Each structure stands twice: as structure tokens, then as C-alpha cells.
Amino acid sequence: MKSSLEIAQEHELVPIESIAERAGLEPEEIEPYGRYKAKVSLSVLDRLKDVKDGKLVCVTGMTPTKAGEGKTTTLVGLTQGLGVIGKNPVACLREASVGPVFGVKGGAAGGGLTQVVPMEDLNLHFTGDIHAIGAANNLLAAMIDASILHGNAHKIDALRVSWRRAVDMNDRALRHIAIGLGGRANGYPRESGFDITAASEVMAIMAVARDLHDLRRRLCNITAAYSYDGGKPITAEDLSAAGAMTVLLKEALKPNLVQTLEGQPVMMHCGPFANIAHGNNSLIADLIGMKLGDYVVTESGFGADMGMEKFFDIVCRFGKLTPSAAVLVSTVRAVKHHGGVADADDPRVDRSASLHAIEVGMANVRRHLGIIRTFGVPAVVAVNRRPGDTNEEVEMVKRLALEAGAFAAEANEGFTKGGPGVADLAEAVVAACEEPNTFHQLYEDDEPIQDKIEAVAKRVYGARDVYYYPEAEAKLGQFTRQGLAHYPVCMAKTHLSLSADPTLLNAPENFTLPVRDIRAYTGAGWLVPLCGDIVQMPGLGKTPAALNVDIDEDGRTVGLF
Image 1 (cartoon, rainbow, N blue to C red):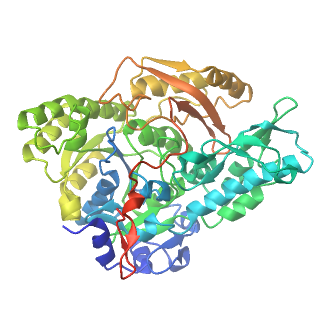
Image 2 (cartoon, rainbow, N blue to C red; image 1 turned 45 degrees about the vertical axis):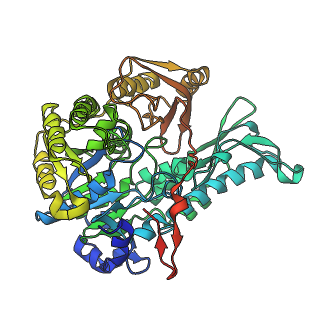
Image 3 (tube, rainbow, N blue to C red; image 1 turned 180 degrees about the vertical axis):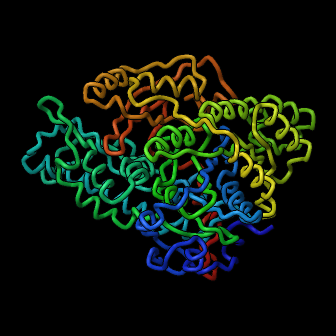
């Protein structure tokens, strides 16, 4: 089989105007960026305000391995499968950050015959949204330092500047830096750092803003620093930065329209990570998708404990959304990994050992099904089939998933077969969407901050207890006094375990979740507890994906996955 990049490069794309017409968009509601991608005007929400919303399906996963389990491949395949069975679907996806594209993860457009295209554009710069978010973030950072240098009218305490700069690249050397060196003309020396743009509050704000004025209001409310006379919060509005930041983001706020390999519309917008941010595409994209399609298939990052919990507890809370079903993506390889087989492709692992590992590792799938059940949503398990998986192994995962309470369990063979290979899964999802639904959030707005953190830790992760470092303990009191206790919590922790320890695989129990600090995203409207050793700037590994990317003698990209 050809590589995913070769398949994408050889595919004949449909002009974006035709995709928009199929989706039900008017010509004046799109702004083409070249021939195969476009921006969508927010005015479509006004035109279609009386149209009934489509069903909302959240694609999530079991605890992932570093190799990935193919959630995007499954989402794209499910969208194509819904098309095969005669439905009118719209997919909603996050934009790719070039940090992971050149790091471990690789591209973010799916794979094989289940891809979003144009694949290279999606993974490299796209329509410039993430660059605009970084520019707005760094404008505020520059205005903070300029204000301190030029008289410090706001009495900013240079040691309590909480706003960090952002860059769209995995660069561990920028996590902790010293700025303002080289004399007074360059500012006052202080410690600071960078976050990857996907983890920035500006990205978070973009992903939940409902329109341009809501965007500006949220940018106004960003807490950038604190004063030295009483610790008064200094906001982006205090620094007169919010207006210019909004102008930088004006075009980026519009969702992007692209297509699957089989011609279904895809809204691709915003790109927050699920381990260090809220991990979902924009609320605007979901709202528009629900007006255009019978079924909106949206993906939450990493496992059900990460992006899905945040989608349900934050995005659905803000957007007043009610999901109809969840799809839990699994693979035989990942189940074996959690069952103690480090390399599922090792030929020395015999049939008996493989089946035993599946039996043990399914505890992780059961835990994630339990998380979905906690929110009152029916779950369909998708077994994303890989080369080397035996029929016996796939059927075993399906059987055990049904025994664990899944509404349905189906194999996904979209990677090699396209939409027809996902038709059975699509039928199961349609049926699940008709099931009784008791969707609800995990906690109420008026609960104390500590209770919200512990609700997620205990009822989602399975922790026995939560330990707060002194800095986090202090923040609990500070944010409560500041009137922020009504905010939801957006937990930042490793995605490789249900706990904060990436080495604790499968379904750990009786562990304590350590919360070392809490950040207040007063513009986005939530609090971010930092658990364990999680950092908001990834680093490149010893053999990053960037080592494989190049151009050939004809100037075509090679090695992009």
C-alpha cells in the first residue's frame, strides 16, 4: 500500500467551492484560500439559526501509547462511513501544530484512505491561524515589558508577571529563560519562559469564543501580571492590548473548510492539546457543523480522561451542547501494551501470551467506558485494525468491550478500505445516537475549586486522593478570594496514564494525584491545575519526525506522516 503522503499527493481534490455547496454554504459565506481550503463566515449561524441541530458525536480513545491509536483516522473513516450509508456528516477537527508534526506524533490529517486533504497544507502553516495566535500572545508579552520599562504606570511587579511568550515548536530550551539582558534599554532582567502556542491561553480563548465581540471580551479579561501594591490583577485591557490582539485574530476566528478523501466537508479550526489545554476544536466549528450536517463528528485529544472530559465539562458547558454518543477508539496493540506486552509486533509473543495480554489490558478500555458512562452518554468501541491483528484478537476486544457495557463494538478498516471499511461502525454510531441520553457535567459551577479538582481526579482518573503542593494550596485560596471559584477546571497531566505518572499503565488504583500549581485563565474562563511533572512546552526526542522530512529531486515533500 502507498504511504499516506503519496495517497494524499495523488488524490484529485474537489474545488472548495463545490465542497461548500455540498455542505449547504452560500457563495458569499466562504473566502477561498487557494483552490482547496476556505474560511467560513460566522454569518452562517445567523442564516441557519432556525435549522435543527444535527447529532453530535465525540470521538475519544483509551489511554494512548506513544505510537498513537488512530483517533483522527477513525474520525475521518467514520465521517466517510456515514457518507457511505447515506447520511450527511460534517467532521470537526483541530488544526495541526508543527511542533508535534516534526516531533513524535507526526501529521494530524488521518492516514491511508481515511485522510483530510490537502494533507501538506493542513500540517504545515495551513491558513496561518496558529501563527496569528502566537503573534497576539507575544504582542501582549511585549506590551507588558514595555509598560514596565516606560514608567510602569500599572505598578506591575516584574516578579509576578504570569504571562509567557509562545512559539509553535517543541523547544525544551525555552521552558525557563532569562529576558531583558544587555542593559536598561532592553528592559529589566527577569525569569520567564515560553509555552507551545497550542497551550497558550489565547489558543484556549479562540477555541471557545462565540463571535468577534466575545473574543475581544475574553481577551480583555486575561490576567497578565499582578501589581506590587496589593497584588491587583493586571489585565490585557488595563494594558490596552486587547483591541490590537483582536485585530490580529479577526480572520483566524473564522473556521477553515477542507475535505475528506471521499468529499465530505471538514471544519478544521484551533488546536489546543488535551494534556496541557482543553484539547478540542473550536466551539464555533461545532456550532456551524451542527447546522450543516445530520451528524457532526468531533474529536477530543488523547483518552476519555483528557480531551473528552474537557469537552464535556468545559466546551459543552460553555456552548450548551448535548452530545448524542461517544466513540472510544482502541487497538489490539494498545490493549496488549496495557496488558504488559511492550512490543505487540514482536514475533516471539505467541498466541497464548497475546490473548492473555488482551484479557489484562482490557481493564483500561473498561475504565474509559466507565468514564463515558459517568457522563451519561452511550459509547461505541471502535477497534482500529492494524496489519498483523488476527481476527481472533479483534473479535476478543469487541466481545470484551460489549461485556464491559459498550453499546456496540465494531472493527474499523478505513485505513485500507476507506468509507466502506467503516460502514458497520457508522451504522452502530447512528443507532447509538438514538439511545436514551442522560448527559450531564461532572460538577456544578458553584462547587468549590478543590471539589471540582477532586471530582475529576477520583471519578475520572480513579485516584484515591489528591495532594496539593504549597504553591497550589496558596492558589486555591487566592483564586477563591478573587471570585474565580465558579470556573471549571482544565486539568493538565500526562496523557500516557490515567494517573500523573506516565509509567503507571492500564487501570491504576489507589494512587494520589499530585497538583503542584494552578494557573488562572481568566480570559478563557477556567483554572488549570498542573499535575505531576507536566510542562506546557514539549521537547523534541532523540529521533524526531523532522529527521525524515525533506524534498525530492522534483521539489515534492517526502517523509511527512
